[in-house]
Amino acid sequence: MIFKRKLYEKMLTWKQERKGRTALLIKGARRVGKSTLAEDFAKREYKTYILIDFAHVSKKINDLFEDMSDLDFFFMRLQVETGITLHERESVIVFDEVQLQPFARQAIKYLVKDGRYDYIETGSLLTLKKNVQNIVIPSEETRLTLYPMDLEEFYWALGNETTYTILRKIWDMKRPLEGSHRKLMRDLRLYMLVGGMPQAVDTYITTNNMQAVDTTKREIIALYEDDFRKIDALGRASRLFRAIPGQLSSNASRYQVGGALESKRTERIDEVIADMEDSQVVGLAYHANDPNVGLGLTKDLNRYKMFLVDTGLFVTLAFLDKDFTENVIYSKLLGDKLEANMGYVYENLVAQMLRAAGNELYYYTFPTESSKHNYEVDFLLTRGSKLVPLEVKSSGYKSHKSLDTFCEKFSSRVGDRYLIYTKDYQKDGAIQCLPVYMTGLI
Image (cartoon, rainbow, N blue to C red):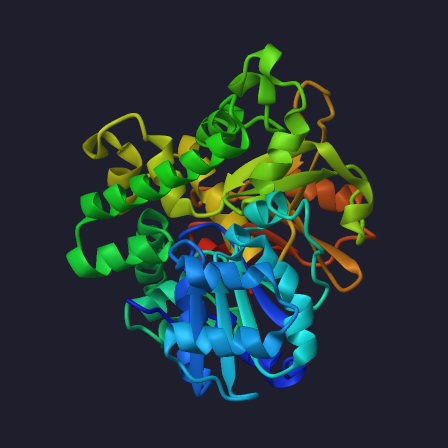
């Protein structure tokens, strides 16, 4: 199925404003829907298009990129080989999985300068980075990132274009939803289980069978692990990836690399972590050592938490070594019986929703009065000239000592402050208690 995606509007803006002066590069994790979106856009917005999938391209077309000195000849051969006529300023050429043909990406500089057609590239940042050692990286690119489907896109996929629109209005009013809250939480739990990977969503819509959805997600996870083994033959990236649920459930103040790997395998681990982040499969929340509006200025590169790009995949990864029927998160989420000690599932969900909304992830810890434990603010955002701290709870429990203490400690820096939890919207003093499904609206 072809799903409606928000990035489409940004692609339209690129087409209308850039008018061929840059190519469009869509990056993101594998299986997130980049190729489908690029081709759908090409079909709808251009008179004709040529799709070159470098994973399944003929040798004749692939060889064309070895010599780009004569663009007239290049375009003529391309039209002959594909049987598709190109129209000046009305056609687009899509380079799918462009990382597999570095010379095609290098050619973007000259193709854009020529100006006859538009160009769209798709690829993961990781493989794009790995395959550019001997080419000139084009500066004539507009880069956009495609994430898994967010909650609103998930509603769209289910044929519901109303609920999230109304939710935006409720957000502006800052009022509880009362009778509608329970249904919205049921919808959210379904989204957490299925996730936002288009293939998993398609499986759910087609089969209405959660075990079939789980099988689809296991296939995607296996694909990611294969990729991680290619970038790290020692298997460290795969082990770090597998350990994400356990690391979050331990409630530690940072990802403990030593808990996932033997000490002798941690040499040059920073490069492995950077490659994992570049893959877009995982996202890192970094510790801000001195929280202020410029969070990146005190970003601690050695202190971070690791989240999975999609909570649907996270739920499957947490019990990957067990049969589907043994995955207690499925049964507990469906029955609304997720205990507090499984709050790490909601933490990953909030991280996913914040990233999809365009936020970089930061958090902050500081010692309690006794110095035996730490307070922790789960996420820090900035809005205008103020910090916006968020504390995540997996239940309706309204205690927020960490949030209160943080806001007192940095009172002059803090604006809005939120407790994200599973109950209906309400205010508790200066703190807004926000149902999880509203996270993407902050």
